[in-house]
Amino acid sequence: MLTLSDKEERQHYLNARATIDTLLLLGIVPIINENDIGATSEIRYGDNDRLAAHVATMMGADLLILLSGVDGLYTYFPHLNPGAEFVSLYCVNYT
Image (tube, rainbow, N blue to C red; front, side, top):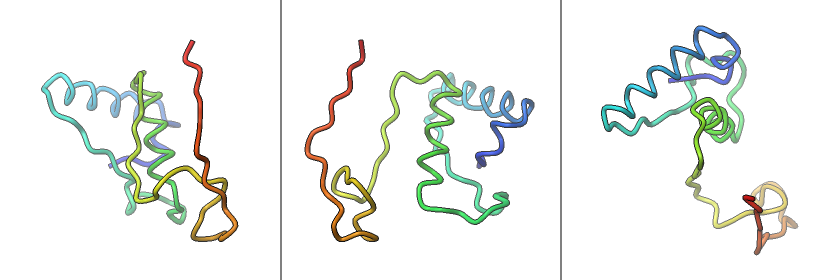
C-alpha cells in the first residue's frame, strides 16, 4: 500500500522502489493500490491512476496500462457532464 506522499520522502521512495524491484526479480507482479487508511486527504477519483503514473515513473517503466470500467477516453467525466464527448482517436508520437 502506497500513498502519493511516499514519493516525497526520500527513504519511503527508495524503500518502495527496492520492494517493487525485488518482487519483479522474483517473478511476482505487484498490485499497487492507494493506501486509503494512510492517506491524509480525502480520496478522490483518479488517485490510483495518479499513483500508477508516479510508480511507473519511479520504476522507469516503458509502458503504463490502466484498466478502466469506462468505455474510452472522454473530454470530461461522462457521469458528471452529459455533454462530454468521446475521443475516437488519440495519437502519440514515440520518436
